[in-house]
Image (tube, rainbow, N blue to C red; front, side, top):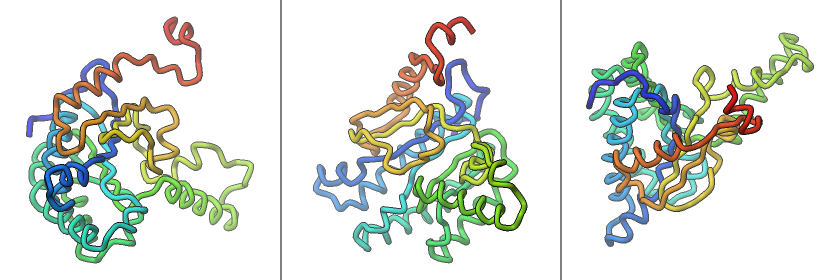
Length: 247
């Protein structure tokens, strides 16, 4: 993995990715779906390396949604095995390149042996500052907001905060990505054009980029194309174009 660099001009601070198309990639090759997920691992490596090299501060990958538990049991089992295998193989490289690894989502739904691997990987890389790699696992955007609301409700019930004192920042502090900048760029591969319950709060002003490329075929060249799209956008955040252009 290339050594992380300072962030280039026009490069997002935070990129969020839905890695879609593994199953279709495998089906088109008459392969079992789990081999598509395995083929997608090389694309994860390419995107992590590409983001780190360009100085991206945070990268969030949607690895497994709360709805994915409804998939066939064999596919879910294979995915969980692949997560463990990939962590065991990649954590040394991530650590040596200063990348911090964090997992977000309803991790209580995961099996104990996977939780142990997650805790070990997070602890080992906790001091790294070159880039933070968030893996969204058993994650749902509605669940995330609901959990933040529950925390605030408990605080109100305990008399720790008044209801009228609750602000947007109060909610944001209870979200899974608390402390990280909101994503500047969202990428979804595979041709679908929806955000599928991913980071619903955090994507409020994110630039959205959709491409037909299936995830196992997404490489650094495809990442560069998405970044060029981002660089071409004028981010107004509710202002007029003239206001933004005028500084």
